[in-house]
Length: 215
Image (tube, rainbow, N blue to C red; front, side, top):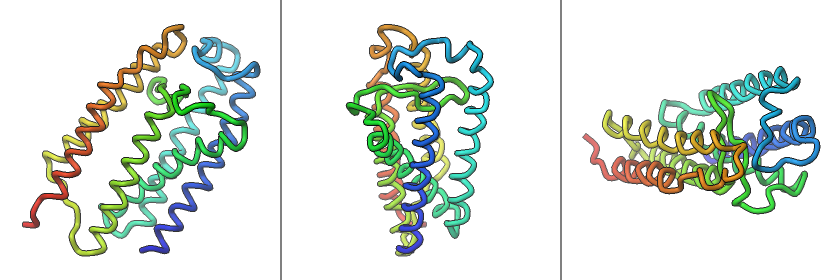
């Protein structure tokens, strides 16, 4: 298990470099004068629209690749879910580390970034997705450790539904912020209380799962 986990970490770090390299090229194409918020709406409507559609496909393929890797690494549904969270978290964290190495960005963890484009633009300060990734990494480590020690973390219908709802709350906070990415007051439209509610709910639900007795 330890060797497999290390391989997953290496995979996430390497994949993060690929992602960061692609973004370096994309910023040169879409933002030749420099990437900064508020975003210009030209990149959504101009002649580079076709490239934007290609980027949407690349993002979808990225998620498929992460899911496929998790399926291959895990031996059961719990392990596969945990490995997906691991690769996603490591990929996301090291994506920003590699960007810092390659182009010196972000200058601050409060710098805003375009996080995703499916089905709409997600945006927010870099700190937010990093916090999510750290939490997911913590969840995955506990799940894998407990699974190997014969004390599997189990989530019932209530907890499962709660995790979906909590995740949607976090996603909505990013999507709402994305709607204002081209506005001068963009920074005021990331609602930390909404984001925090989703994150806190997920953590409390996970603790509930840990405290459940085996039946």
